[in-house]
Length: 418
Image (cartoon, rainbow, N blue to C red):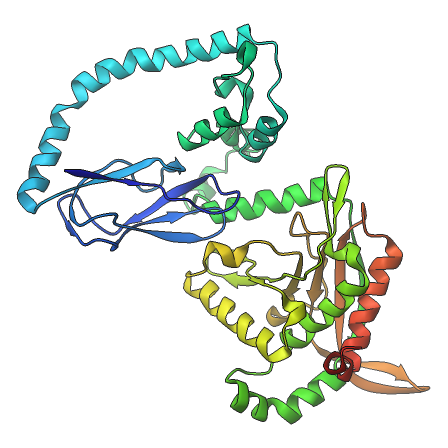
């Protein structure tokens, strides 16, 4: 008996993955539920467990290949090494007739697609069109089953399940290819393919710039009160809650207070509608070796500072260890990015679409400021709020930053929910 290894459900809006490392070779014994390979998706890297015990008899999808939902990755046969040896031998004998039948089938597919394209005058169904846009597919890649060849939602889902992807993805690289490097420089260059995560980061950030009417407003906050409170209670806090008292707990709490007062900053645009979120799922940008990821603190508005710090600690560790679950990455309504940990003094963060707001934190730096007619030195931090001007007005954006500033300069307000 042969058990197939297929691409599992990858999570919301994720339709394909890149095959990473195979932990086993053909002929290796496998235990049920043992991790046998790694898949790299747009958001996280996941391990695929063995669906049954046996011997890895065939690897269908090699490292580096792109596969869709449900695609065949390999096969597991029952028994030991003898069965494993027989399976590859049988597989080696099959390709000739398989190739013979595959050739006409391959030739038939373009013809069928062309026939569908010429015979239909119907545009794709609205649900199908939306799904095609999400998966970067075009109507000529899909055989429509509706009247006059119309492409339906089920046709798109079937195409995605077969692993069909847009060939146009490679075209931008050709268009944007740079001029050849001088011969003396070419030998000293190193060309490395972008990981799927890095490609997704690049695409999403550029899409956000192209889609949203993005604008950034700035303010600064005196961190004296938070730093004093943190210094006074950090030892007691860590002893009681088992986690260090950082700045992110204060900032996240201040943000949730401001979002409740200014719900447009917590909303998103969907076509000609605005979706207001009556909850605060705050994404916290975390830098990892593989790129920037944004795990989400869910219902942060209902959490205490201690609970927020614990959750941020858990998510940060999981991000660095590469063990983030898909659920940890989804559903964010607002994002906080802390460039200050790297020494950034000021920046303009890019929106994490489809969210309409992102707060940039920066380095705390002693600066002279005028207070009560006197010039004094205070630990100051610049804050930057990038927002989607399509639904957030300048007044709302400025008010949001002022509310965050007020909460941080008088942190008792956070404790008293003021």
